[in-house]
Picture 1 (cartoon, rainbow, N blue to C red):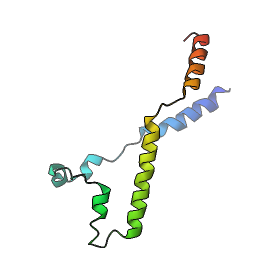
Picture 2 (spheres, one colour):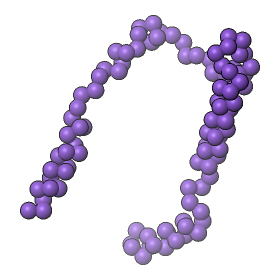
Picture 3 (cartoon, rainbow, N blue to C red):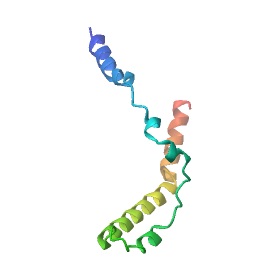
Picture 4 (spheres, one colour):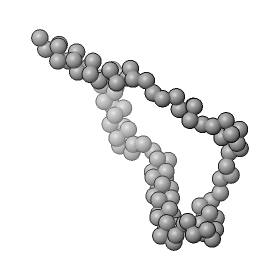
Length: 99
């Protein structure tokens, strides 16, 4: 009797996986497919060319703050995922479990 709700839940969660998705490749025009990749330039150089008026000083500050935030997040990801004490504790637990 307990299995029916579980089976219904699994069915409800897996049915969306059967949905079809639009063909995203068709959204790219042939001209875009043949185009060269854009040149990547530093944001500082881009922000220095604000003659067209589309990028305001406030936009520039927001962009630079976001870039600094992303650099800080990247620096955290470069570090060790766990500290040495935690690694040793996990290794000891795995040894006790037979792993």
